[in-house]
Length: 555
Image (cartoon, rainbow, N blue to C red; front, side, top):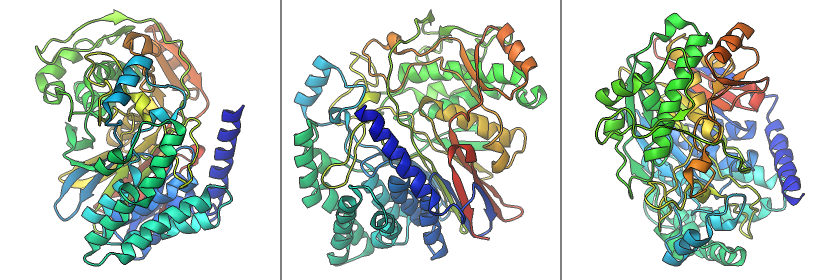
């Protein structure tokens, strides 16, 4: 009952905050001076203020992310995590910022997990180091132009006008960071560092650690002090003349790259959208890529993930041959990239009976008039965790690790969990053209694939790409289930979920191929998208309005 009341309160807050700017901000927009598509309208409004005041995409993204911790609380929080991709117009390069906290560094804490398991359904013991604050500051320091004070100002207004008991507490905490920035002499970078340091090594850190001890969390000040946003090279794949960029295998992002590589061997346009052939071949390709995800992905700082082999031409050709155009697979079939074998193992799994509570994520994509583009997927996975004295809430992301001996995603001191959060940037002729962010756990890259193919194969603009019918499979392990027996974490063999407005003829044909078909009239996952039309000089932004996404642009 307490959990249900907590969720109800969170959703009420989200609806309240999202309605604040409902008359101003719709779900789609186009313009020449910059655009944002995200979750709550108040967060979009916050980011647009930075764009309209001369800020660039990094400034606006940081402002949007901070505000999303208020407008989309329950799906994101200031103690959460944010993987982010940015195209920098100055260098014409894509960079990854890993705003993901790590597991406790204490060997005693890790020994406790090995003995007792990682709590799966809500516990401060499953909380990683909070990553969002350092992510926003790092984004501003490396790519932005504004101060932390300017960037957080719209969020403070939301807090000051809010009605939750933690709002004043979080406002005090954020104003401490502003105070540290003001008082620090020196450069803009030194001032920004002072703001983040007060959170991670100053009096805010002390307050957090006291709360950790009170709630049974294993996190301590050394964990906070050691935290840094990793600056990394993206993973990428070529598809039909586009370059698709993803975060590394500490996310599920390379699944999209692997799937696109498989799909390049099929003429999707000739199949027509939502035909049985189209849905079947995409679903079967996803099953293969997700099997490799579950077998090989993990924090590359701790394990050797064979990404070059997984994305190679020869391995892709071998794996593509496993796709039967007439029959749906019920087997989990990871390959063996070390020996370039199409199959490492093949097994039909028992479907999981675990009931794992999942709270969703939110979304953020931003483009400015100078050609900078950001895609970020902020989340927190609260699942019952509540704000501490500082107003900071942390989630349960450590449950995306496991305790399986020898597994690449096994929990270790200071290790990042392999998360589902997976923003996407796409370039063509070395210019950014598409940014996508999706909320929806294991569905994120599957929905991204739906949305991206809608544009690349069929020319849909964002307003159509994010609202047309979608589909996904649960033929994979549950990324939120830390069960050490990974076979028992497998969700549903042979499953296929599609929107019910897809034709009954298509549905019948998919059933004939063996798919365990389920239909839904509800939207599948929560996508937002930006498309940049360089010929016309227009930026188009949209988010699925059925999922309370919002968008705005400068004319």
